[in-house]
Length: 66
Image 1 (cartoon, rainbow, N blue to C red):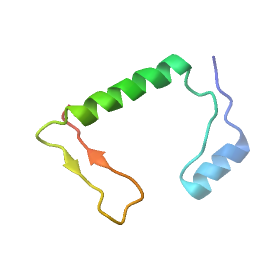
Image 2 (cartoon, one colour; image 1 turned 90 degrees about the vertical axis):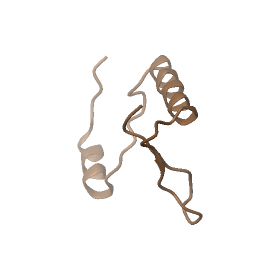
Image 3 (cartoon, helix red, strand yellow; image 1 turned 180 degrees about the vertical axis):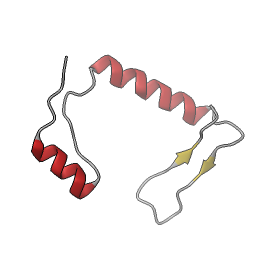
Image 4 (cartoon, one colour; image 1 turned 180 degrees about the horizontal axis):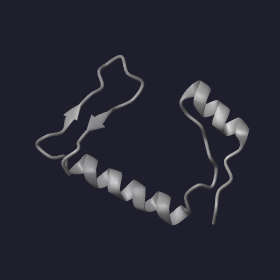
């Protein structure tokens, strides 16, 4: 199903470098992504590193080799 991206969303992205596009992914696609992220977090490669510190609002893992 094609998704229409409005001019307002394009402007928001240009201004804020982020935009929420609702219903872009199906429930199954979101679940597949969640499972993939969980797998990467629980089995990081030897090239992974934690890129967050105690001042960050979340936990950030970089791993380009899984």
